[in-house]
Image (cartoon, rainbow, N blue to C red; front, side, top):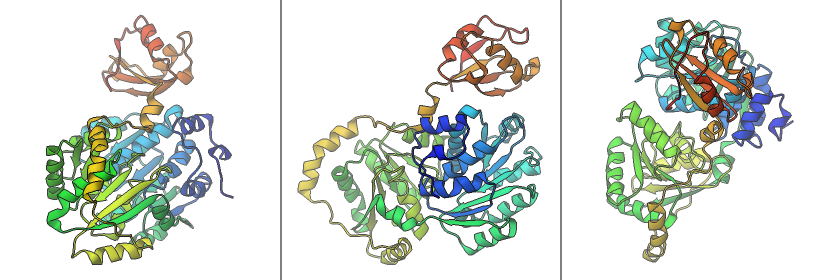
Length: 481
C-alpha cells in the first residue's frame, strides 16, 4: 500500500518533527516505495531520476535506524561528486537535526588532517567520494566495523567517472551483515553486475522517469546558429524573466564566455565549473541557494548536487552530449512539486544528439520560435526591475530548520579533559533548559561547539557566562558559523 503521509511510517518524534519543519508533506513516489522497505532492512536497487526526492528516501530511514549512542559510523553513503556529497550531508543533518545525528562529508581538495580529526568525534553517517573514502580506509582513519547501511548514490555517474572499481574495493572491506541500497537514474550493465555480486536478494524499484520529466517541466527547443547564441540567451531571459535560472554549457571556456557577457550586461550572475577552487565552488553553490544572485552559468559538474527548490528555468546553452545529462540538467527545475521550464539551444549539427535524448525521455521536444522584438520590448521593464532586486528564496530548508538553533563556542575541549556528558550535565541544570534542548556537541582539543535547540540559545549563552564546566571556567560566545 502506498503511504500518503509521513505519519503513516513508524517514525520517532524527533524525525517527524524535522520532517514537519522541512515541509516534507506527502511522500514522493520513490519515498513511498523505499522508506518502508528500507525500514525493513531490505537491500534495494532503485532506478529513479534526480529531483524525485531520493535523498530523503534513504535519509529518513537511515536517521531513524542509526543508534545515537554508537560512536563509530553506522552508515556510509558514496557520492560521485564533492558537491553532491556536501548536499547529501546537509540533507542528512537536517533530517536528523533533532535526533542529534552527526553526518560528515569526506572529499578531496579539503585537508585530510581536518577530516581525520572530525572522524575521531562521534559520527553516525559518513558521506564521501570514493577516492577520499578509500584514502581514509587505507590510513585506518575511518572505522568500518559498525557500518550497517551502505548507500551508493548516482551509481551510473560513478561508472561514468571511472569510480566503479573503487566502489567495489570499498564494498569488500565492509561488514557482510549490512543493508545495501543502490540509487541510479539509469542501470548500466556494470552497475547491475556489481549489485547482484554484493547484495542479498535485492528488491528492484523503478520510478517511471518519463512522467516525472514530462509532467512538471515544460520542454522546448530553439534552433540557432552558434554565433547567435549569446544574443538569443539575453532575449530569452528577458522574455522568460525567471526568478532563478541555471544556464548549462558544455565546457568551462563556454561558461567563462557566457558569464563575462552576462556580467557585462549587469545580470545578477555567478559561474561554476571544475576549474574553480573547491572553496569557490562551495561559496557559489551557497550563494545560489540563499538567493545572492539569479543566474548560475555552469558545466555539468553542477547538474548534481544543486538542490534549490525554486529554479524556474534551465537553459541548455549547449546540447548535452550524453542523453542522461539532459535528464540531470533539466531535473534542476520542476522540483518539490513546482513547475519548471527547460529550453535547449539547438545548432544545425546537433540533431543526432537531440534525437537520442528524445528516444531516451520518450517524447519529442517541441520547437519554439525565437523571441520576437515586440515580446522583448514588452518584457524589458519587468526584467530590468527584477534583475536589480534580490532573489527571495521561498524554501531554504536548512535555514528553516536552523532558525531556532544557536551554535555556542566554548574555549575548552579534550585537553582540559572535558567530555560531552559534562556539557550536557551542566547545561541541562539551567532553569528552563532540558537535555532535549541540547543538539550536536563537537569537542576538539582546545574548543567545543554545542548546538542549542528550540530557541534556548540566548538563555544558555547568558547562564554559561557565569557557570563552570567540571570546575573549569570556559569563555563562551555565539559561534560565527
